[in-house]
Image 1 (tube, rainbow over the protein chains, first blue to last red):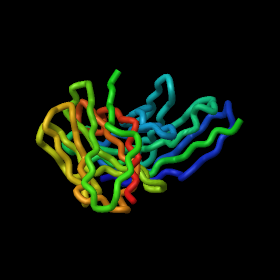
Image 2: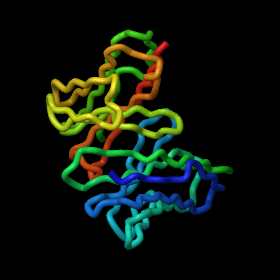
Image 3: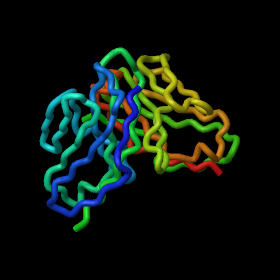
Length: 111
Length: 114
């Protein structure tokens, strides 16, 4: 299983772009990278997923370099409501049921 | 919308008691998961089930068992609760079993074992 490493916490001011990087040096060929967001007292919620290069949706962008040993979640113009814990998940697209979450990054958005 | 519900938001039990945590999903998902969440440790997978009556151990199955008699319901059982099982327990379900399949989480059960 690919082990992931993320910063424990980050602070940002409202309106700024926030980039959270996840390291996964032993990512396997068939592994995908998925990010979840968790607000206090709630279960995690899917944000975005990618395999390589760049993926963008209405919430975030995910940048994955060619070697895929890391990935960066980008949140444009954060607001106070983006204060949450963000989890990086690396796991296979097929062939295995084992799923492992990273320890998460606590993002605090400051007014 | 997918809905995953858990039987209790808060639960207080005594050491040695048998504890049942229930999870129900309404989207006919094949796969269901139980995690526990502790400060500084993130989410850790306890068990998952990929079909009725089928189960696989996750990272930390010791002290837990599970039951899946119906597709929509997945139960986590603490046979003899201990204080180190005080935690937030999260249930999730997904259509497929892999990380490409979005997991939908319930609101969690905060269990305190005294």
